Amino acid sequence: DAEITQSPRHKITETGRQVTLACHQTWNHNNMFWYRQDLGHGLRLIHYSYGVQDTNKGEVSDGYSVSRSNTEDLPLTLESAASSQTSVYFCASSRTSGSDEQFFGPGTRLTVL
Amino acid sequence: GEDVEQSLFLSVREGDSSVINCTYTDSSSTYLYWYKQEPGAGLQLLTYIFSNMDMKQDQRLTVLLNKKDKHLSLRIADTQTGDSAIYFCAEGTDSSYKLIFGSGTRLLVRP
Image 1 (cartoon, one colour):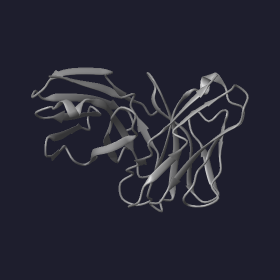
Image 2 (cartoon, helix red, strand yellow; image 1 turned 90 degrees about the vertical axis):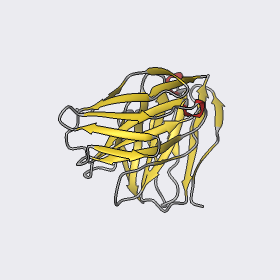
Image 3 (cartoon, each protein chain N blue to C red; image 1 turned 30 degrees about the vertical axis):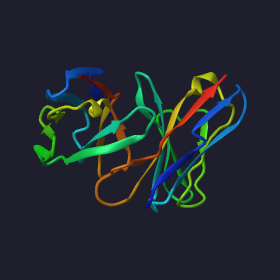
């Protein structure tokens, strides 16, 4: 069955370190998204991609970067982790026809100490 | 700008109906969605409604859309303890594949 996975599921890191969160989907979807979820803010879009070599900034992109070298993967990198980036991160994907339904991964809980 | 608003919390007794409300601002929204998030999990799509519809029913779920007031609601009939979760509404458009999510409504079902 097609799916979307994230790794690691939990990560503790220190301020200033570079961290990369992986997202892999087997739906063959062109669109992929990264969100962060914080209490009181719901889901906020960090970065998104509409296809290979395409990346776009979302509403809270500062301090984050993504790259899209193939259809299946959209890794999210925190260049220099900050305590304000402690959050739960969700990856999602969607197709380019019909409704915009997004399929979500299980999430990565990141703690920056 | 685009904004989606929901009340933060709803508590109901098991067997009662639950109604979760949402308002949105983007009149060009083509689809409106309801997602469910259980503890420690990602979001799962419950249902969606196309913007030219007023109502959609799917088993215990009824979605009502008032496009004039930009108001969306989700009614869960015969609410069960397994329905306890956070419910997110979201709007999407044909011109962009992005979704704008509300902050989520936490539904607590009391036995």
